[in-house]
Length: 83
Length: 222
Image: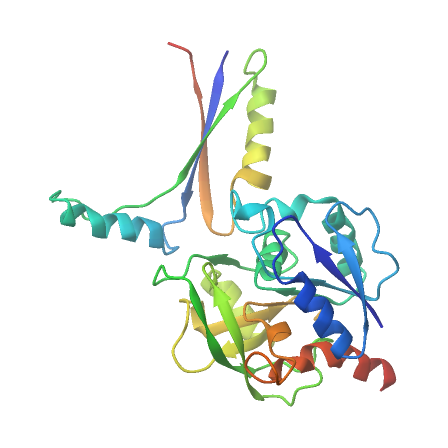
């Protein structure tokens, strides 16, 4: 079953308080060297049948309308083949 | 006037909003998220809460509920719509209002009496206030940081679409201290603080919020 993955990230200029919280927690746990953390979302869509150009175009539409808010987030789409 | 108050799964302040509508001299009409018509109301309030559990993003799922298709169409025809807190988030997700609301910059839920300045008293929801009126109503939110790009913020300021601004310390990181905005036509208003919790002396922060619910009546008799 082919899988299409949509990664959604807050736009670079949008404050990411969750990422900041993670960044603040890392040194407290003894992890050093991380200068910034941005937290996003990953959607794994299981697709019935082949992943055609049309299917990908439709996934883009899903990402634009529901999975992301284009005012504050960017997204990328890629296909993962089963191992 | 008949003012509909929408209840979504997870709405919290719908009953308070209905009560405020009635105290303001209007008839409150309960609307359900699954409704396909607005029952002949003259205006709609989208109340606060955590509709659809705030899953995905606050307001993102509610925006596609059946009743919102009706609200969006009616708003396009000029019907007054007020979104409070989660309702504001739903209106932004619906693209009825510009910008978006993100997690508070200090990452904590905030719950306090909040001073505001009413910047625009030319909307159907704020006409009972004097321009520049300073009011105190309840603020309670976890994701109340208003954001938009610089060009949008400049346009909102330039066109008088900022309806209310926070006074004193900025409670949630909202850009330019914006607490509420309206659309270009001026009939859709979103507000992060809760006027419906400030309509009776017995409870809450006084009665400064009442104007949001009496403005419509004053207009219809003007």
